[in-house]
Length: 102
Length: 102
Image (tube, rainbow over all chains, first blue to last red; front, side, top):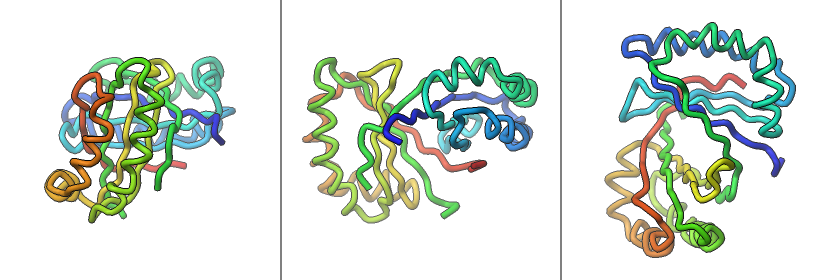
């Protein structure tokens, strides 16, 4: 829908822990899927900076992420699983599609 | 395909020029589409920082972007159309999907 938002969380992972981090995200994915208002989840890995990831999560609103998910037990599970591999706090921003050309 | 890459160009636009920038991207899109190896183009707009955009372009390799597209006349057309609205040089990174959970 036009109102859908994407959360983009830029996450720098501790060097050498990339594979463990990826496994943690795969394990945490069901906690996102079960959260009301969560539409999609993918993990992108930087080619220039291989310890940098972007977690891209589709939500039906910013509130579904900030208010509902962060109060959801799944959020704590996500942080418990993936947090130990964060080199620094994730940088989180929300975006909306302005143009989908092709 | 698993080898596809996404270019993510973070672009800060001069305040007040957002609508003109979006029109320029729409006008430039065919130059991307015609470039060999270019698979998709979308423009995302930040909710927290409404003058910040992310141009997300799918390529079949990093070289298709860096070597082929930047030598392509369409690249100069893109810069001619959208460049006047850039507040600063775009920050460009390439990523690859590590996980597409749902």
